[in-house]
Length: 178
Image (cartoon, rainbow, N blue to C red):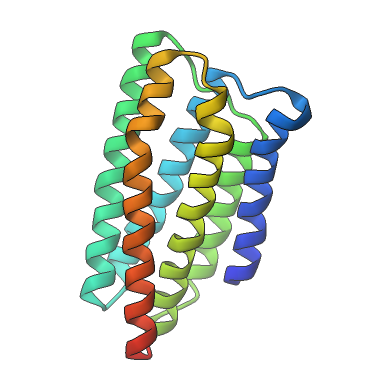
């Protein structure tokens, strides 16, 4: 899947997340938990592929950062939902994120070298922007549990930092021609 196809798939995931608020009601805390865990896992999986595939040190370093940070976020989310006795509930948004992540991995596996690096980093820029949009427009406003809302607010700056890091890497790769 090309970046534009991924962006459309991701846009659909975010749109379905926003559809909760528009008419179908806001996602409940169990659905939000599933969205958060899925979004993190999608980025962990892409990071693992990039770490093992890229030959560019800055891309491998970024991929490791994504693996570490998103694994930590998932651990925090898992600990919180366990404490709250909330079971993450699959929903159209979490399923769409999973499907888009699987399609992205399939597309990335067909690439190597500079083409892989560019596609991976472009994906990271689009993905983090879309996740931030969902966090800001749907997930934080919809969270009913104060601790879940606090966790979303706490991890938001990390997503912003990842987006900025990915944009910087995207610019560097563009300058290097690779």
